[in-house]
Amino acid sequence: MRASGVLLAAFVLASTAANAETPLLVTYIEKPPYYHTDTQGAPRGFLIKRLQQIMARGGLPYRLEARPPNRALQELRLNPAANCSLGWFRNAEREGFAHFSQPLYHDRPLIAVALRDSAAGLSGKGLAGILAENGVRVGAVAGYSYGEEVDRMLAPLGDRVDRAPSPASNLAKLAAGRFEFALFNSEELDHLLVLSPELEGRLQRIELKDVPPGKARHLMCSRHLPAETMARIDRAIKSLRFDRSPDPP
Image (cartoon, rainbow, N blue to C red; front, side, top):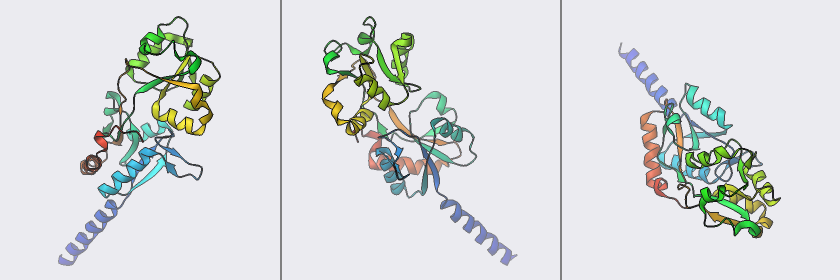
């Protein structure tokens, strides 16, 4: 009995150690400059860097894998193992199947961008005022949410909203004069202008005072994640002050 007890204890300790060393799967979507895969196949982006700091501070092993958005959500719903996905907005529907960390980052406000030649008639009106102009057209990204309030403003406009497949193509259409202005996250626009600096002098950024502040991005985790692991993640986020830092990357 004594030998059996020793063997059982050794097995439990070995199993616990193995489980403790199992890396947590953290997925990310392709959304530069927040997170993306570089030409060498490695994960990059300023929120990837924040995640690396968080997991190092919390002493948590993990592995990063890219996912399409819908697959990332399905894995959080259905995967029987603990897993997380990086950089998601919190809403009631997602809270039904996932837990959220403390904020990792607060987006800068949504902006309008126009060609300088046409920007003068748009500045100072707010988004609602711009959209009220007869026949004005706006560029946006297909399948992308700009927040509940802005989405409601765009919904009744029909084909006055030109839906591009990506932020890059949205910018290209704006530069070609396909519409009067386009909507962008400031972070994404900054990234695109690094890639196409010749456009910087042609564009005017327009502050939208009637649009809510940028939302917080979180680590969204399945309900299989142990509470203590989430607590360690949250302690690391607070220790690094990411939960209160609105600073741009």
